[in-house]
Length: 486
Image 1 (cartoon, one colour):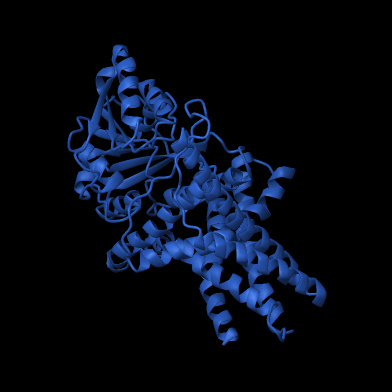
Image 2 (cartoon, rainbow, N blue to C red):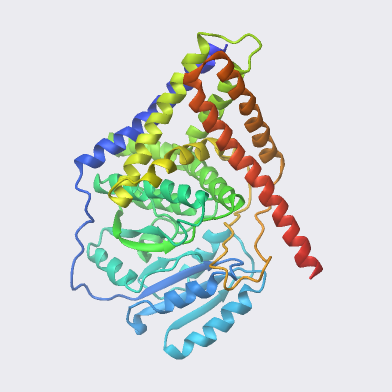
């Protein structure tokens, strides 16, 4: 039975590993340059939409950076789509009153109900927008002054429906978690988005730091809150309709990475579950539509990328079972280790290439970050597996936004937005980490040196995620109790 399970996992993991390597090969064949941007294009009316929900620690930074955009004041409209239920709304009114004398047009829009979550807010604002183009910025982003000046000219081609900028990171060096997150996202923006865009394949709007043609959104059916990734859903609907997307990596919009592990888990749950929900919706159209085989294959890998998490979780449990079996198998253990080593090699090679793309070279810190990033991806496999299963079964859940902390200047001591995670899954992750600690002892006792790196990565990964989450939950409860007493 173990051999059968192992064979199934190996067969299922092979395409994921091969696809990562194919991205590296294709990138070398492509000219890694931004698409040509027409010069001297006229300035159209632009509406900047800012979806806000309880963001009092970052909303001032966002509003002031958007108000400072270098764009004609008579052609710029700002919509603050505010669904907040806390002091954020009052903070927004104060900031707007301070900015209005500068001549910027800002509308503070409150809906009767938070129907459809972020997608509902964007659609509500779209129906009231005066702009021919719609820019969308999440609360934790800080657009550079020339953001619109650089993005708008791409729409000289009437077939272009969306322009996506690259994310930068304000707090990349804050801690080990943010450094790993930045590396993962660099892989998406510097490698995956670049390859898909330059190859003329489908790629997605990333929910923020992008500019849409309003008629493209309307032609594709508008924003829909039926999935947790409304951005991915609309992207495929628009491209199915024949609209062309442009990826502009030279436009970098800084953002804030989730620093506590609980916030990171919230973000990953939404992305993993939402992607599978979107795959359920659009894979039939993708595979049966009149698209090239290249579009179908790459689109399938894109929409089903998160299906790797259940495989990694199953391999981790299988590895643990083999190492801690009452009668250890001398033939089975090396096979499991070889499979894990092969998967790890493809992922590490992928991360290695991403680091070179981001920094242009590899330094000592870069090499140390590779195993930490691999361990984090392993440690998150249980949580992401649950998200994938919920997406496959289409289990309904609300849109939980990722808590933002800001730079600390606007946040009183001990005051934060809790992520509200349960303790059962992180407790399981902690127990698995403890089991791998014992497996490490068994590995050394039997002299299974090939299994040693895998044990260390699983131990660190599950320990970092599990213990870190339990610690963060306890800290959030203490802060909540202190705030209540205050």
